[in-house]
Length: 439
Ligand code: PMP
Image (cartoon, rainbow, N blue to C red; front, side, top):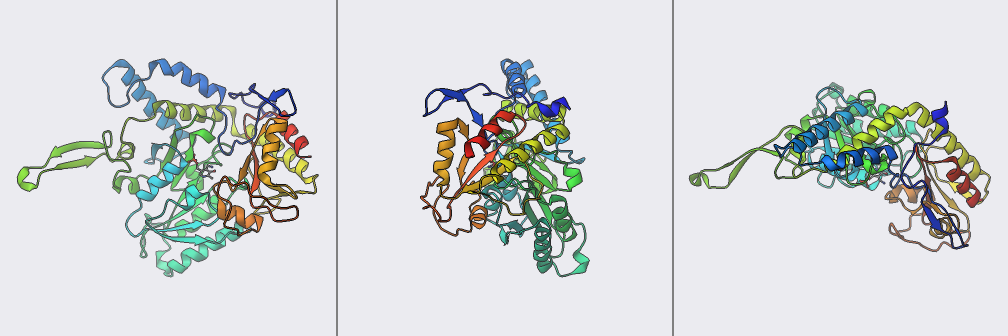
């Protein structure tokens, strides 16, 4: 398959950077898990549209009408990309973090939340106002399913409540939040099985697909996820736009995430004798949570990326990425000082996100050397998943913070890790250079 052999064209493919050793080299962007380069196709689509953009849902002029159409068509494109069900809503947000905070703000009263402690902070932390049960790090996907089953069964002893409910049930509503692919290990989580367990106990499930959607097709319908969240900037679109898609009832019944124009259908003055002030009728569509003038370019870019990935075909993208993953893992396996971090073990299916430590090296210095000496951009740190990385490193140290560069003496446990990540735009040469550099 020729498509399987060629990376998709991305911006920045011929950017050169200086090396401390002299000369310069083309930049090898191997930090897709943080932000992927934009597809050239997305950039071209945005450039073609930019001269025509106008206010969305707020203007009578031709360009406003055009922009409103494109904005709403983008919603339909994203719904198709995610294989949403009839009646699902696609809400445009700023990012995955924003999407999950929106859902957290929309939880019904008394909702309990179940989340693995291994989650990215964006999935771990937004549930501040709910009762949260943090689930222990599982060491296999099956253990993850069993752990959730146990936790929900503890809450839900009555067999009669084992109904597919609307997220309610005798013990009140509950939500499970789980990541599709880890931003640390790249490992896939058993989303379908977790969704089945959640639903069997009358709970709902939201999928953090920030790392899954750029690498794998995501079908809300097949996974039976109630909601899914992802970010444009990891899906080959520029920054500033994200998606929360899924069931409309909790979203429709919640207070608007942002209050303001666009979210309100009707605002009326309350009679002075009734105390004055205003009464508001909020929209019950996605607009309810999209107050203010939206990021029309960002939304258009997300839709363009969804189309580009669909047209390229996930089958060949996945096949090509598998080849790159094998090259990196085999290369790292040849270096005895390297330890690859894994929760589920070597055979777990994964996306192109691999974290490791190098015995005798401070991870931050190692990552800095990859940049300065080889022109390779990776990431070092705890990757906004502090509990997971500390579990994998076997280090319970309180320090460092996200950007810390702690000194680990040779032979001591590393306090942070190095992450290499890649995807549809990565040329083989970047991966080969990386393996050579590590060796
Ligand atoms: N979830 C996961 C698994 C992620 O990897 C990230 C980004 N690193 C996020 C959520 C948050 O994404 P964003 O920064 O775009 O909100």
